Length: 218
Image (tube, rainbow, N blue to C red; front, top):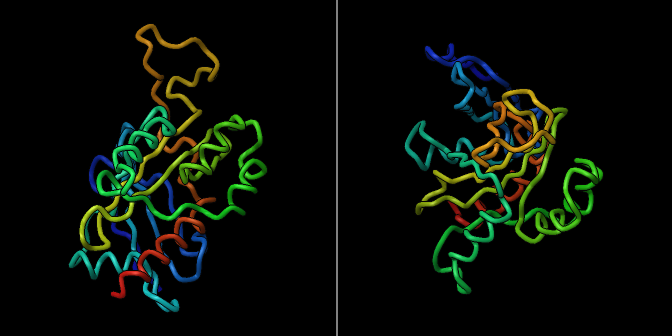
């Protein structure tokens, strides 16, 4: 049994919660409480490991390698994840010596099932192909679409990593998505958590993390 999360700090409120039953594999159990700042421009997931699984939870591995609690990952938003990912992969060069190294791509079965999972009209055929090609995960809720990808840890230990994320849908001003673009040409801001938190991607993501951690022999 896990201990309850502490009360949210001043200026934050509870936004969403996931328990181990929501996670896609029996080996990566975690509980997560998502906090939001009062203006909901900052989302802060608090994760804790669950115990009794066949291997250490990825959260337990982080705690051991980090020497205690800390920042596990940062999510960086983009308005065009396909362009961003191509630039990041190009920066690595042909030998992969520079830039960022990403987690293993999801299985072919994941991408074969993706149009049915999120809706065939959620992305264009070229965008579905780009998701497979670039290793982007996609999920959606009743408000919008979530596109995301994760790097491997950026240091020499399985601790801090980065998430690149794009949310499509639910605008802060609640206007229809097809409304004209604002005068300055910049995208409209979107409501916090638009498209969900990738719950439908947890299984594939955590399998990738598990396979990566197995190569570390820690």
